[in-house]
Length: 436
Image 1 (spheres, rainbow, N blue to C red):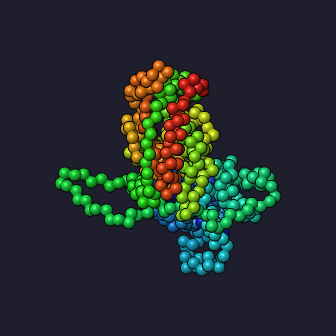
Image 2 (cartoon, rainbow, N blue to C red):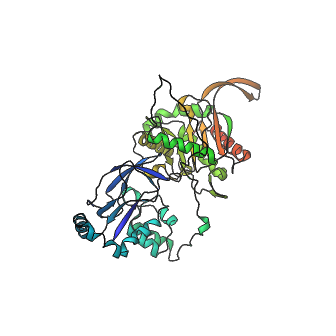
Image 3 (cartoon, helix red, strand yellow):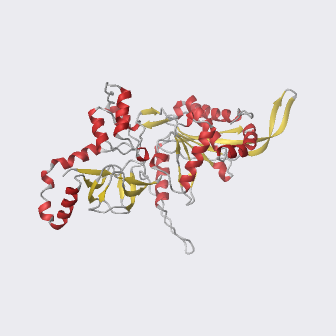
């Protein structure tokens, strides 16, 4: 009887464990490929995990509310169809006899070994896809880059075969073992001991919810991992404000989307990241990883008071219309707990909008393993000195503060300052006659 191990999936670069919040199956149940097995939760997202294979649930290794490390086996599926179901029933009736049988079946261990090879991937792959990848020497990194046509973007056999046709017959070069990057440990406990605090007679004590605990651990971890430095500039965004006021009603009518300032902020950041790739990076030990993609995370406040960061993929390749659509969609899904694991993975830079709370300036904490985060403040009317041909004049202008927190291990003041100034320049140089 062959079996398949269901592993706790990797839900993001800085996530090393997840909580099982619900099981949809029990031992002995027959499941189909892509059928939902369980629901898990991290500090970033709640997600339903489907079965990569069809078979019978042979074993469930963790109960509801268990906190499970990434890569751990959470369930075992017997893949022999009806025979697996019969053996499961017999195992309950004759445990003494059945306990001897699995030891004589070396095939049961093979799928677990195969699954372990893919534990660092953020995606699900069926045994057939893994088998083809092994035969054709397709690396996990190559598989992760294939666009899937299956359910929820899963890679199918046809996707892999199409990829092979385009790749050619020459096998891909294997990556050197030393090139494998190890992200800093998430949720690492602080080395210091927090002071003991006692509640007073009239105080209320409310335990942090699961998401708040994990956010707290990640914030402490980020400050321990990265030496934070913050630079601040003030930008004159008068043309941008006047343009948006003129366009927002027509934009809503034409595209069915609200036009906020965030798509313009995101576009400016994406362009600046291309200008200064040293900010679009991560640190792995003594190595610097320069990210090829520009994936901008947008911090979204949830009704619960917690925070989540969905990611705009390939932000530098999208115009304001595309960015507005993505941002509005992801923000709505975040507030309704409808984000998928892919929606919160792969970010290379983050923007958090302090201005939405009428705050002028913020000094945000870096979202690991990124090396910088931008805070946008509220836009206010201010008197400003303008240089004209007739001399200096005082005028009312729309101004805002931009603050950049960055990892001083690899981003020095010059790089951080130039990048931040470039973002401000893109906003200040906005053409008031821009057509959509």
